[in-house]
Image (cartoon, rainbow, N blue to C red):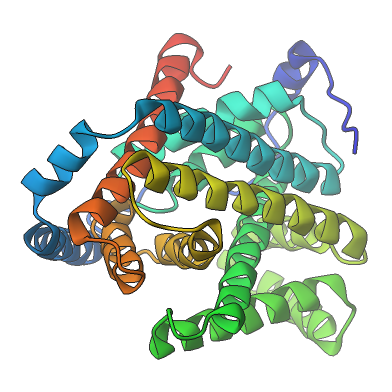
Length: 346
């Protein structure tokens, strides 16, 4: 799929013109402090438990004996996987009628990864790349819609792989987690289905927007912006081919993530087959979607220790695999930090 890219100068000039339909979000000071405190508590508690179970000193000794040639190969695999995920985002922007070069979007994606690691939110990166795309590619409304659909399709692909893993090897994944994967997949498919098909829900939504616009204060101030946001999301209705292509791209990226984790396991001498890594990775990615800890710290490492432990891998070795994965992702985000310090979003 080829997506044309308009020259940056043209898009930047267009970005300087205010879009009356773009939502303007005012910062909410003091909100979310309780949630942040709860996530911080979970992060500290779970991380401490993992380190106690696995032993940080033992994990570091395992890392010291790692074969870094396999780690380098895994890092290359991670970069390719990231590039494929950016391609999915490019497809979603094309669904809004906007084009951007893959290079431009990779730069914005890396910058978003940097902010995702320095800000205490799982969705900070999504906000940052939506903002960056709104400067370089399209309006804020369409950019946000593309990121929302990109995140939704990515989540569905992860959950789909997780359900496949449950079917292939149900004894490895705990029953409660398997049920959560299945419920999440069903909900995600229902949401996408409502967006792709014309149902009475669409008529109900249109009627609700009409009533909202009649409100004395909020309706006049926000009615057009809400309508613009709804129209941007509706742009994907009637485009099942585009969504299917994006899902296929996402599945390819997740497939490389399986290879990636397998290579980390080989590097530290873990006795894990590629088929077993195919069971672990979807669950790890699904846990990473949950906004219950800061950037998935602790919860992802615990998932590695528990699932690889069921396959006979020692806790310190499983923790070493998790640390290698996080170090490579951190390296990618640092590249994003350098790019941001040099050119910001321009």
